[in-house]
Image 1: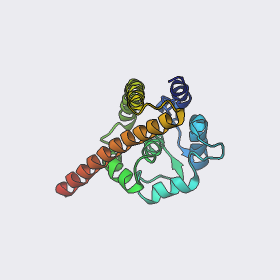
Image 2: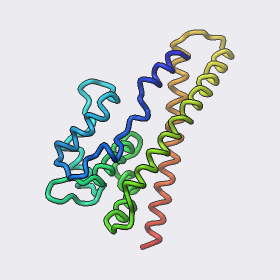
Image 3: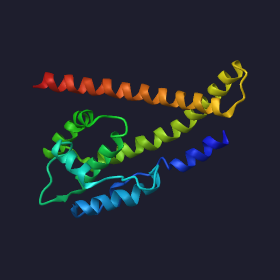
Length: 193
């Protein structure tokens, strides 16, 4: 249990780029990368891991994951969308991310969406998720410990493997549910055409 609490503290789950962290003036790609590196440096699993690269940003632009940039500069709205992409890429394919963000991009391009306000709402949801996650994690750990008692094993490694299996299963359930929601977005978009 203490190990998990230590891991939770190391995760820095509420570490996010906030809208006020982004300058109001447009940034060049290198400045965008520096902003992400500065804000997410502690979330790296390995020291040489890259948070964001020029290739990634170019692939996002080519894949039309965000609306077109102007004069090789990224607006605050671009950076907010790139951060959403960064958050989604851990669990979704780029194709699914494009489908997910297509409506946001369209509304932003049409000037109908206040993306900054929407993004702040997203950050509030993340804060709530983090608190719920901590409580849920404790429940999962108790569940694993109870199951381990049934097989009368006190080996820490076996408990850790069972915990990992449980966590990955929950992650897969959430991802599969998200994919079903993406499929519904796709169907709704086809019906609107």
